[in-house]
Length: 202
Length: 202
DNA sequence: CCAAAAACAAACCGGCTATCCTGTTTTAAT
DNA sequence: ATTAAAACAGGATAGCCGGTTTGTTTTTGG
Image (cartoon, rainbow over all chains, first blue to last red; front, side, top):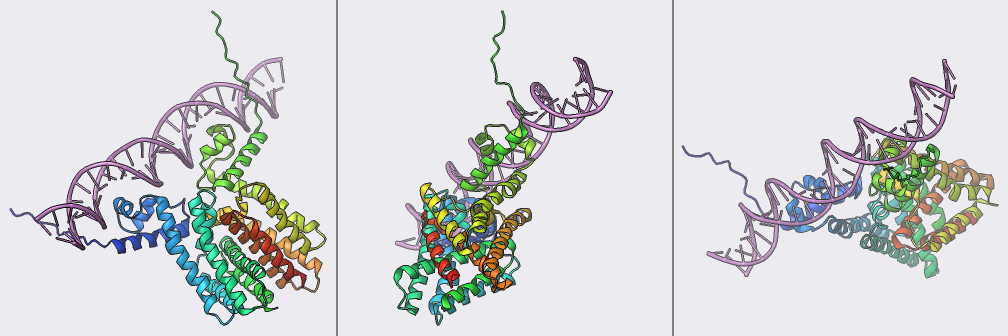
């Protein structure tokens, strides 16, 4: 009797794709449920892989977390917050675009899961220095870019004031996202956008 | 032979004190390490009590968490943020006092553990509706109080604008605290305070 | 063809939350 | 005063899930 061989689909090694997939799933879960509330098993299941494979790419959960910040969160901040401001006709216009654009997105999706940077910042930056530095780096890039743009718009603005102004914009964005998450509403973002406009318009 | 009785200190029932102690320790640990990263065991050890006693006062960890928000975090927000603004000579002066006062405190203590409301808001408000509502209540009280004070100062201000302005103040405070935590520096708070002053001065 | 990389599979130890049962103290009615 | 009931605290345990490790098999590049 010839044995019926179950044809298991041949495995194909694709380390880059695997790494990317794990990173994507982890970023999503960390964002939605938080770092501590997400187990590596959750990530394994989500990425349809195995514990061993994950371990091969990321030795520990912390390594994975740092990679998510450096390669995913940073990119997301860059795309949704920094780029639009750099390409807009003015800093004020860019800020308007970013705040209201994000508000629109939040209203399209039903749930407000918050700013990924902020989420991880508050959960991890006190617990671990490496996490703190990774998060701080992203905050600083954002703030510097904004400060630079503000001065490009208004050369009369001195560096220190521009820096303070950029800080206020970033802070109000973060805070508004926190309030938006708590109220499950985009309204705080729109309110802040309006007020920032009057401040920048002067 | 008479048995030597080890004199164990007689137990004294003091449910209120026990409850208070547990709540205090839990609030502190949740604030410093986060909700998920804190085990009930940690709370038990910190309060120098036992699992059974804790369970008697708070059936589950979630019950404890909700109590911390409603009875500790809310009070802290009231004392450090709302009261000073209500008693100051003007809203602008009050805001100045709060932001710089907190900044001073952060610099005295070595570590910036962030705004307790913000910390728990971002960690829990998406995970659980009860938590979200508890956090949102505190945010709203804060915002309403501020809005009311702004209008008392400037009767020309219409309600909607006052509300938006209050939102910006609360948001920038929250965000500045997040940045302060990530950078372990009070500078973001001072920067925001300065910029808010020019906005309110006009 | 072979060595190294990549992916799989299973299980480990430890700590977590929740619960149970026991014993003690307080309260209040008789 | 006495005593029954309620409130309170102690301590141990169960069951589960956490992150990580350990072998082994499969794939791939040189």
